[in-house]
Image 1 (cartoon, one colour):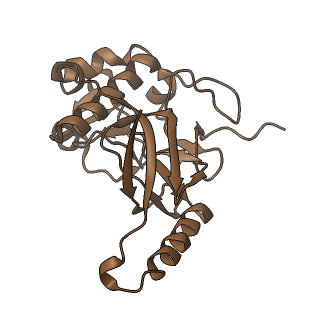
Image 2: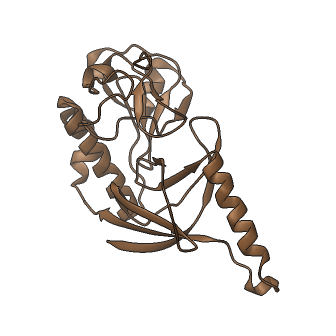
Length: 232
């Protein structure tokens, strides 16, 4: 385990709410992250795909109020600093060969099942966070953009592609299929063992091929199939 003292970074969450995240130096195991603010342990409802703790909604505004109260208790401007969280986590440090994560053949080889695909995405994140170097950009199944910073974005419009374009360089994809609008999404399966919290089914490569767009079961947290309704 390592511990870092991290300020909060504001962003617009996929749910539409303002949110904040604590950007770590390494990719973290999601189930091995703990966070303390001024000595108090905070329960975290959501994480970025990199394992960065995310505060959404009331929890984020509670942090801002805590930060303001801590800031104003100092008598001089020189003493005033941004509030940082103490984040302890177990890092994932994998430097995979670039041929596995940043070539057409490497990404195609990962599409066997959700385990191999999600493993490839995790290796891309580790490679980017450890090297801080840009990756090539790809469109997978005509629906998901793998960007230069190892993020996964969902393309808003459904684009049907032929099998030979299941993995396509972004430049070639735009030349063939035209422009597109992409929106970032943390509502994406995190582990091959995850089950949809609404219907209980696993997430499959077939969902991706069929251009599934994932949603939050609540305002944040694990992904769910967009076609599911909550079980009674």
